[in-house]
Image (cartoon, rainbow, N blue to C red; front, side, top):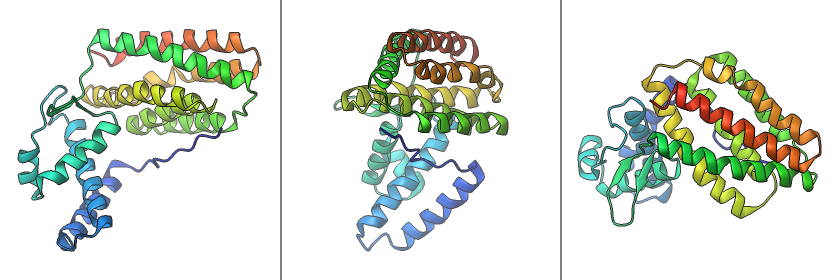
Amino acid sequence: MRCEDSREFMPEEVTKKRDSLRLKQVHKHSGDGNSATRSLLKESLATKLREEILAGRIAPGEKITEGRWARQFGVAQVSIREALNILTADGYVTKGHGRSARVLKLRDPDIIHIYQVRGVLEGLAARLTVERRVPVDDLESAMVALREAVESNDVRKVVERVQHFHVCLLEKPGNPILREHGRRVVIPLYAFTLMRALAKNLDASPWAFQLGNHQRIIDAIHMRNPHVAEQVVVHVINLFLESALKVWAH
C-alpha cells in the first residue's frame, strides 16, 4: 500500500498570508450559506487557533473557550467548534465526552506510554510489510523528504516530515486497524513535539542525529527478515524516546 503526503508544507509567512486572504473571502460571502465557504472558514479558523497554540498564547492544558475566540475572530461560536474538531483530528486539542476543548498536554509518563505503544505498532507494521513483500519506495521517498527538511533547518517542516515517515510506515501493510490506532498514537505525539520544539526555540539538529536511525528502519525492512525488522524498529523507537525525554519533553 502506498502512503501519500496529503499535507504540503508551506513556510509560516506564506501560510499566514494565505489564511488572511481566506478569511477576507469568507467574511465577504459569509451570508450565502455556501458549504464550500463554511469549510473554508473552519479551516482558516483552525489554522489561526493552531498558530495561537504554537506561539504559546494558548498553553498546553489550557481550556479553549469557544465564545471568547468567536468574539475575537468575529464569527459564530459553531464555527469555532468546527475548527476545534479539525485541531482535535490534527492532535493539538483534546475533547472528552461532554467536556470543553483543551490544548494537548503530555507529561513524561504519557510520553513514555505513547512510545511504548508506538514501538509495538510500528514494529508490527515493519514485520507485516516484510511478510507481505510490500514495496517501500514511498517510505524511501519520505526519508529523502526528511533529509531535505533537516537540511532546511526548519523545525516545523522537520516535525511534519518525521510524522509523515512514521504514518507512512504504519500504513504500509494495508491493515486499517493498525493504521487507525497508529495514527491515534503518532499524530498527537508530533503535535506536542512541535509545540515543545517551538517553545524551546529548537533547530533541526536533534533530528539530524536521528536520520541514521530512520534509515535503519528502511534497511531492516530490506533485509526481508520479518522478526529482525520488528526488533530493529522497536529498538529504534526506544532510542527516539530517550532523545525525546532529553531534548524537548521538559
